[in-house]
Amino acid sequence: MRVFYKQFIGLDSTGIKLVAIATDYKTSDVFEIIRKSDDPSLVRIKAPNGSFLQAKTQDLVTADSKGDGQWQDDDPSVFEMTIAQRLQGEYQVTHGYGPSKAPQIMNVCFFFASYFFSFLLTKNGPDYHNKVIIGAFTAF
Image (cartoon, rainbow, N blue to C red; front, side, top):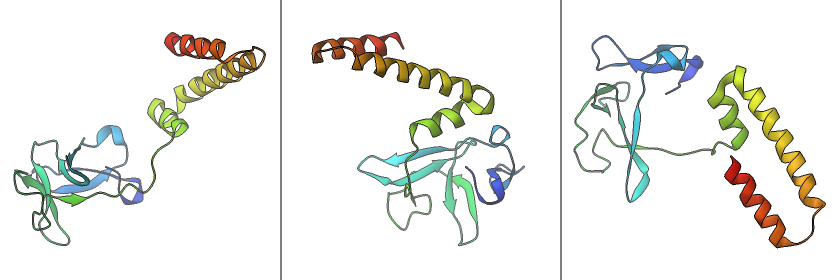
């Protein structure tokens, strides 16, 4: 999880307290977000040590909860998650593949899409378009 100053959260040497020192996501810890089935805005966050995060005080969050309480406001291991903006395709590609591979992927996909849709414009009939599109996606 990324926080201020381009740092990522991890666990300290005790394995319980959260610290923000890693500057590369590859060296930070992985946390798992578990949503409440009937209200996906309520989440529990599972730490790499197998415990869940909980708010101990206004200034302290630790990774030492069993996460077995009720999904209610008085449970310190339940957090409300708001998604401000969903990620779109090119963002996922460029950040997923990284700076060395993403440009190659984007160029190939753009070339294919341009060529493919230009080709479709030269043909007639909706049945033909559907067959070509299905065939093209099957090739992926």
